[in-house]
Length: 135
Image (cartoon, rainbow, N blue to C red; front, top):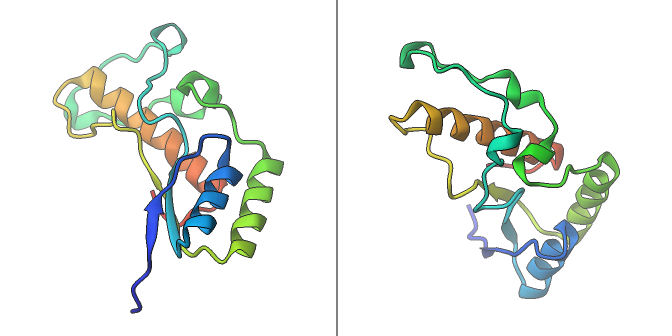
């Protein structure tokens, strides 16, 4: 397998700005964030989750709610399509998303575990919407 040069690139200015940075830097692959790496949903917007025993924990219905509760602007279908088209035309290979720094699915704290799982699913959905190759 040939070696590839890549970098984590800033999404400041939008996803296309990140793609342009990767191209200008000469990247073959790139890594981006699909939401803020340092923010949780605000407590006021979270749907209360009744803690379950650890053996029975599972994703909650909060996962299907609007991405606004996760402090990230929803990605429109047209923006996702434009990103995909521009990405494919750019010659950049694999694009991978980096999850939030706050996610900890190994937390022994039920509240943090649930918040982490919910955030992970939202980021996974956003990565799939952009047709990224990994999260």
